Picture 1: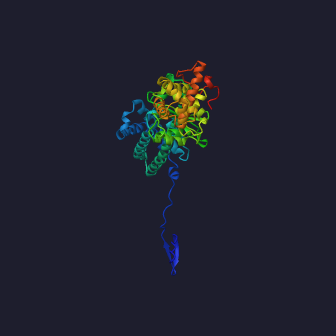
Picture 2: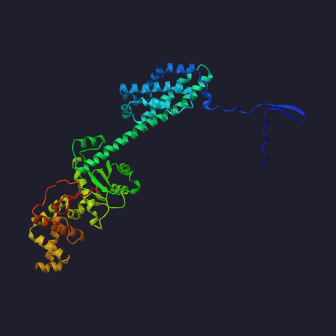
Picture 3: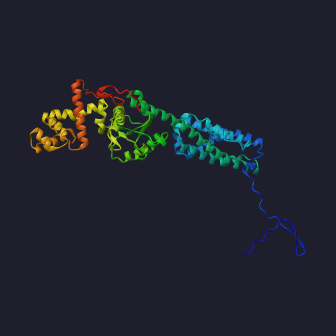
Length: 448
């Protein structure tokens, strides 16, 4: 491949004994924006300031024509927008004096924005207003130039300044969102703490309403251990999981546990719950019963927390596990809710069915689950034992032939007799923030 011939420089060159003049065909060196903006006369800057009010008024009129939402703003809000635009034009004139300066002039314009305006105007709408403003000013400002050099400086200047203006708008909304997010996080932590403590006063209702939480809708509490590498991000992870499934959530890292509150009921096979489990560590996760409203959530939280205290007693506990499936372990720790549930769900139905079922259950459990041995002790036919065991399952919802159910029935009958023997069985549904000590003494340990 032949080399490209070198282009001769402009000037005089000798060829075939003759002196030739080579014309200068090189392109002029492009000027940088800062070079174009150098030396903007003071008269032009004064003219910009003089027309700033008129430019702001006409810009607002352009917004009313081009942006449908702008007419819905209140008069005070439209006046605030006009003030921001006028300040931006005046600051543009100051910026032309030193176009290499930082964003102080543009940021100053958005420092005048009232908090009320940032709450009522979305970021997307702000982007549209900045776009209309820059497009309108790009059309009008060059007309203020008295010659080609000034017109070019105004055109280049507004393009560069509008870029900084857009970044300043984004920074203003980012600061507002960060402050609002920090406030929401603190309020969310207060709500979760009030639910755990059982403080269901009017303040809880108003705080929940501020976070758009429906206080009259059912909700469920879930308690587990947060992932060690994402403790600071756990609350956001819970919200992200809820957003993926269109479920409202509240959460807080309470001590060493992550307490999550989700709107609606939860099934242990729910896809949302499976997604939510990824937020927690590999340890146990306990799901409390669904409360019918915000005011009843303390009961769900109390049972879930009591389940976390007791879950270590069941080595084969599934993940997640319902707090109701941990009734025997919770009862052994003296949890009043668990004791009352075993009394109402097991002991009362058996007592109402007659002494034969209670006697058969005790004998069957004492016989190690052997039907023939149980029948011999009761002097009945084995089929009679089988029939009575089926009746026990019908009355209590617990099948004595299933090992886990047999354990629940054993603990229920044991603690029931002990409490009746002590003469102070509590059938009340008093709320607790955690388990109480054995046989009803209050738990004095930390939440965890």
